[in-house]
Amino acid sequence: ADQTFDYDVLVIGAGPGGYVAAIRAAQLGLKVACAESRETLGGTCLNVGCIPSKALLHGSELFEEAHGGILAKFGVKTDNVTLDLDTMLGEKSTAVKELTGGVEYLFKKNKVTWLKGHASFKDAHTVEVAGETVSAKDIVIATGSSVTPLPGVEVDNDKGVVVDSTGALSLSKVPGHMVVIGGGVIGLELGSVWRRLGAKVTVVEYLDQLLPGMDGEVRKEAGKLFKKQGMELKLSTKVTGVDVNGDTAKVTVEPAVGGDAEVLEADCVLVAIGRKPNTDGLGLDAVGIETNKRGQIETDSIFNTKVESIWAIGDVIPGPMLAHKAEDEGIAVAENIAGQTGIVNHAVIPSVVYTMPEIAGVGLTEEAAKEAGHTIKVGKFPMMANSRAKTNRDTDGFVKVIAEAESDRVLGVWIITSLAGTMIAQAAQAMEFGATSEDIAYTCHAHPTHSEAVKEAAMAVQGKPIHI
Ligand code: FAD
Ligand code: NAI
Image (cartoon, rainbow, N blue to C red; front, side, top):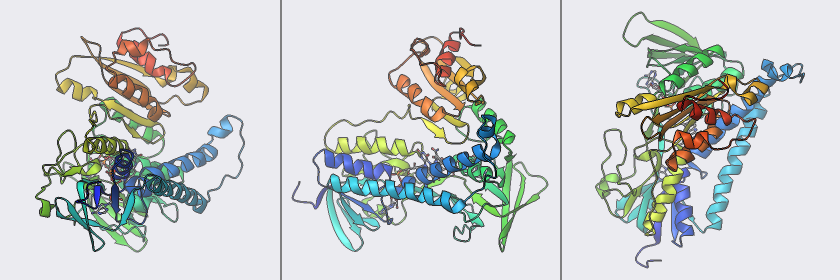
């Protein structure tokens, strides 16, 4: 280690970006510390994000399978199915504990020092953590993001009437009526959890479709399927006020373009209108780093900020706010600090919504491809024509492959079906290798699998699928 500094690398934040960067830097032989203000490691993702939400999505899916009749359809009789919510929440907490503990174990194994407390910059090589001054040759900002507040609406997760995603992961009872503000990823995932457990769920979305940023056809299909599942969707609608009275709230909504107001009575209101980068109290002024108008820290393609010794990754920089994007940037930044070449191809980052069916995409949407001036060919294959989906009584959704007309190069793949999150990996890999739709079409896919639908959609780009 360089004797001038306490550490070679100091990482601020131990989420998927920060903890991965710290471990990778240690693997590369550097002396590393990681500052984290939370009681446990793992950041948003492990503590109050990806992991607890997926545990509840799984648990509530099991409940719905038993309660909603799909098990009975296959002759598995489950009379008097009841919900023990405490047990379900307990199982979620166990998963969180095991995984955050796992990161702590990995820190010890790789000799990463955990500095407990909030870090703020003193200068380009020095931060203060819990009253101590710590110096490092290189410093990585991986402070992540937190919930965007809705002006005039006060969240109280303990009370459980107006909550954000953190509160919605720990409600003590199933609400009668949950109003979700924001038809994005969090609203739909957590709305699905509580709907499956018995709540009536109304989603209020400002735009005319759910899930901004995803492919138009997929957004439309998602809306149709969620409605079929019993979710009420109020699209092109804005919330103008939330009044809490004891255990209930009145949510006033009106058409986005203006018009007659309507009042929704709710037992729980979930605010899920996006997330914002964490830079408060970080002392960026002390090092002359400014945030852009979205509050993000800008970096170059190797994740270096305008200050040579300071780097930034994950939700706090531009790009999709996703755990795997943060992790890949964590590896790349450590490699760059160590003098290697770490890059992340931002054009090929898959995104997955873990509802049922799952919704996944990678690359360009049809709309974005056209807007970028590409002439495209599109192939689609419905899950209705996939034999495994048929055997499983799981035929909602489709696969859509978008290729550039002349070169046949795949520009984007969009999937809506139960296993979309797993199936999108092969599309991402194909695109990373610069595949054409023909490459996918001529790759042997095991039968009978949902993945055959990706092959058939690629064949459809050429106009010759077999099964439709
Ligand atoms: P974070 O995970 O936010 O970690 C940053 C850490 O830094 C935090 O622990 C914070 O306490 C700490 N910190 C901040 N400032 C300081 C400071 N000054 N000093 C010390 N410590 C500090 N993404 C997916 O890819 N898949 C999913 O399924 C998914 N599900 C999600 C579900 C929910 C409900 C939510 C809220 C998010 C979900 N996400 C998901 C998004 C994912 O959690 C984030 O993209 C990811 O956690 C970002 O990682 P990060 O390392 O950049 O930041
Ligand atoms: P989001 O950006 O996905 O969705 C927010 C939605 O709220 C948008 O549809 C937006 O149009 C709408 N909206 C904004 N203001 C509104 C208003 N005043 N009234 C009504 N609607 C309004 O944000 P969300 O769902 O909060 O999630 C935050 C981020 O967390 C995601 O963007 C994603 O990066 C990450 N995440 C990822 C998950 C995954 O990968 N499966 C799961 C959960 C979160």
